[in-house]
Amino acid sequence: MKAGGGAEGEGELGGEGEREPLNPEAADTLGVSPTYRDFVRHSYLELMGANQHSLHALNWRRLYLSRAKLKASSRTSALLSGFAMVAMVEVQLDDKYDYSRELLMAFSACTTVLVAVHLFALMVSTCILPNIEAVSNIHNLNSVNESPHERMHHYIELAWGFSTALGIFLFLAEVVLICWVKFMPVGRPTNSSTHARGAGWDAAVTSTVIMVPVGVVFIVFALHFYRSLVSHKTDRHQQELEELSKIKHELDGEARAVQTV
Image 1 (spheres, rainbow, N blue to C red):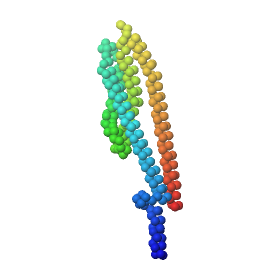
Image 2: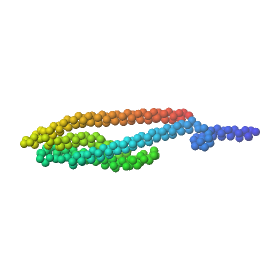
Image 3: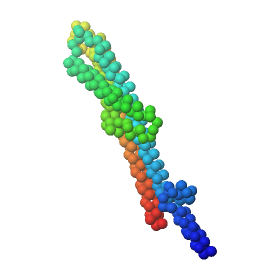
Image 4: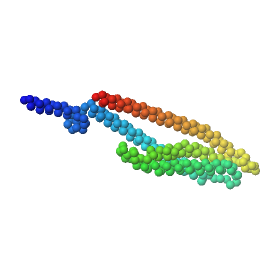
């Protein structure tokens, strides 16, 4: 009887040992409820998994933002550079009118720089966008690491800035110069100086007066938009730092609880 009781007691002790295994996989296999240490460990893994998912979500958001910027740069650059080339080719210069050398130089330089800036943005978009599109079409969280949008971030931002900010500003200047080149010979008085003011001069001045406030509004909006965007990114980074600090405090509290147990 005692031997049986001893064996039974050993079985009870063995049962108690099996109820608190240190290995959570063994607990899952035996169907035994996990201990507090295992609960903390699983909570930690779930928390880290959630953080990893948030990191992937942030990377995917950056990928989609880079793709949208490249698409916008590609469309805008193709449109404005094509218009500048057509305007330079189709503008008819009057051989009988003595154009100002500074006006022709400004028109030529503005057109060349405008086309060069937009072609650079178009080249960057054409080279990087297919690689981002290929990754974005794969429905896998880990595939975002294969995209070059992080390494090519500076080129993407440069192309976007050239196409939207500098390119549009040059396009506004191009419109004003085209008006001067096109309208200056119109309505000049006969038997007078070639630079005498006529209807064409008035039309060119009118276009310039209209375009100057538009350019000022464009610059103010661009600066305000850039400032708002920087402020938004700063607030977002501050929020992420606060979330990371909160997660760190939670992990430290769980670690201290495990050590106490």
